[in-house]
Image 1 (cartoon, one colour):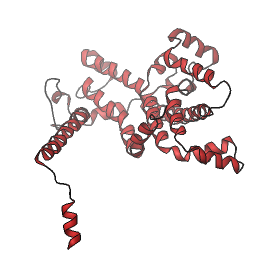
Image 2 (cartoon, helix red, strand yellow; image 1 turned 180 degrees about the vertical axis):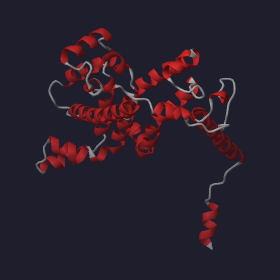
Image 3 (cartoon, rainbow, N blue to C red; image 1 turned 45 degrees about the vertical axis):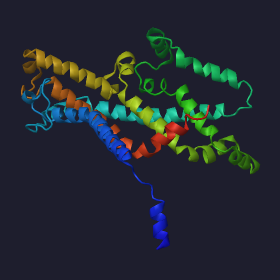
Image 4 (cartoon, one colour; image 1 turned 90 degrees about the vertical axis):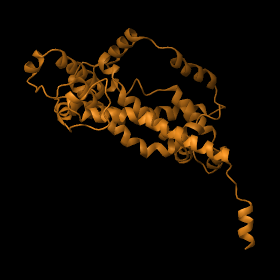
Length: 305
């Protein structure tokens, strides 16, 4: 009985002002979530709507009629499967190679007693603030054999000083006594990296992985500037092409008969909506697996300088 009274006496009482604040806080975040999710929902509704039901001056919370013709049009594009495979491959290979490069760079910067460390850091910082420009970059890629190859998607994006800084700051928070103990047991630098630093750095690697996968998935300009082969087309570049074609269909009636496409669903809005949903779905499916590490990786990787 005494314990019950003790717990009741020490229970934190919620005042009226506290309840009002909690209520307003919940309402604010509910409204914020609605503003974030509504554009996605609107895009999803438009992708399943008939062209006659889509209008820029009206908002539909549910399709008046479920129509799958826009998805069929996009999926049946001859290059759609090729673009999807190329985008998946560039995301996987590019992210894996990026993680390898930034890991080596971050581990090097944690060797505070290494000669020339400041010079290396200064040189690596230069690309963060300066770039060669489009023409010199195009000329350089052509000279080294990257032009019109799959590796133009992977190699140029491998190095990121920002990613190196994030991982390096995370490494510096790991207790150095673990490294000293491993060195006493005869472990070398590579063994210390793979057995101590990497297993303890899952949050920051999940963060960097998500950033780079999204970046690789959404890039399209490198396909426009440095690739001419149709077999290397990417999903975002195909989206751009589909949008241009859909606008042509909507503005020129002769295009419908020329491309032998039915006129009931060739609408720029619905086709763009269907293409966008097909593109963002893999990223949305990937995010829940990395979300639990994401916030921790961002916060811990940016605390210590």
